[in-house]
Length: 398
Image 1 (cartoon, rainbow, N blue to C red):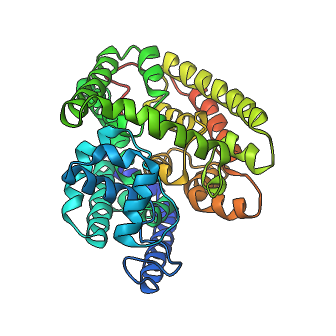
Image 2: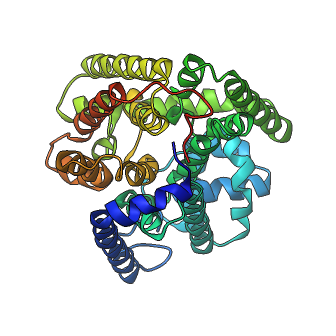
């Protein structure tokens, strides 16, 4: 695949429609942020929730690290009591991340809530955009990346989508150039492991063993350092106190059904029992795994392979959210000059806007996200069949 400097002409000659889409999206994004903040009363928004909603978990976690009480935040009752004591009444939250995240968020505890949210959002957006720029530095490309509707969702929710997107984008950038570094980056996904469950399969079936081992080593280092700093029981407490609560959130799905693009949650939205929902999810997961294995055994075009892996990863797990789809802003921008047909462009736009539109349709009890992602995955498989087999170093993203 050509380098970033070689792809710039493609943007100039074939991205005119992409530029229009990006500008419209960017205007909508800026208008949304301005409107949301104009009606807010920091640290609360116009609806009475704290700004950044889920960021309250991250900020409270950072404060707990600095105060030496990181263990206690894993207890949902203690966590809620402390949040209410600091910020006042709010909907219940629970700490949901693996303890390794404590290693990265503690500096946020030095700031007030609003200031910490601003730092978190600005740093995350810069990391996302900077990672995307390693693939293509052209203004039109970066505008497309920066205008992704998932950005609004992530800003609204105060979630980790910017950072996980940056990690994954850099992973694909370095995958065949610096495989050990790519593996170390993938190891950081221990902080959001459910988003990278299929990546070890892709690495193994494509013979990228250095990356595979580096990812495992990086994850083990994070586990060991976390245990060294906070005590080994921080991990046992996580599995004892946090995982059961997360399983309960998954089983009930209350308040999250419209935000989760998974077959499991779609089945629950339609009134299916837990048993039926798990069967639906199992079928989807098996298909997703099979597609990833086939794609990486064949060593397809690297961009198509990345698209397959990211899409399959979102639908293979029952637990993923629309704010986890920030990386699709980069992916759609990368695919735009490659898929030039009218129906392909329409499909790209549908997936690009899906983090927002899935909520709109979900409020109407119309689960559309998983079917759309399945259609997109099928299109990628068809595309993979029509490209030649590639081997490193030729099979590299720019």
